[in-house]
Amino acid sequence: QVRLVESGGGVVQAGASLRLSCAASERTFSSYAMGWFRQAPGKEREFVAAISRSGINPEYAGSVKGRFIIFRDNSKNTLYLQANNLKPEDTAVYYCAADPSRYYSGSAPTHYAHWGQGTQVTVSS
Image (tube, rainbow, N blue to C red; front, side, top):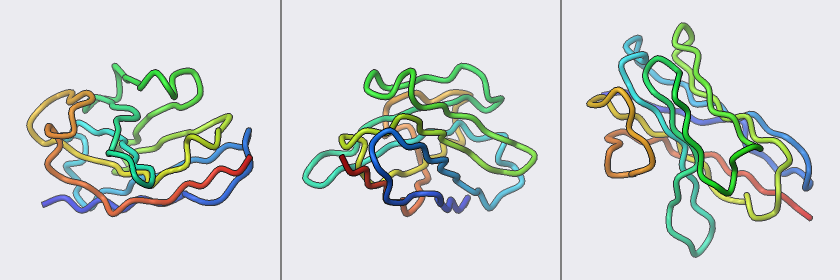
């Protein structure tokens, strides 16, 4: 079973950038469709971005499109989320997720079998 470990979260001011990373424990990382989700206090977990096994066809939630970029380095078994122009409403715990069954899994959290523990992102105004 793949193990996912997120890092890169922190406390930043509005307008700043962060790069989140998700390190996978398996060398078969390239066989997993990947996604980022987030959960703010008192809210349900929501989709942020997804990417296919090969790293093409990224998809974004409307709230982050144009500001966030999802990409992966299969040679390093790592998924990334470049978050630019952060806003207070981006404050949440960010989770990466892996799906071993599909080439691309999209926005449905039920498609993802494996989840990391999350990394906290706090954006102050």
